[in-house]
Length: 95
Image (cartoon, rainbow, N blue to C red; front, side):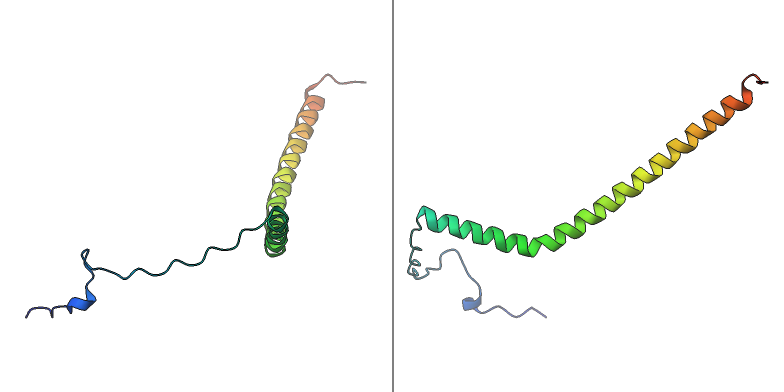
């Protein structure tokens, strides 16, 4: 059984001619003040939307850093105490 042949209209070919569509009208030129106002508005809108996400991501990263620092400090304290105790136990007796 052979597959059905597609209709010629459904298959685009490189030799098909398309009608030119009229170019969209160019947007009006903006002066420097309008561009600055637009940039400020875009910045405000982005910060409004991204602010909560940035806060959440930053808080999570700081939590990880705090946990890592806490573990490091605890390890350093344990090692320092162990060295100090060993030094006292192995040193000459005072008396």
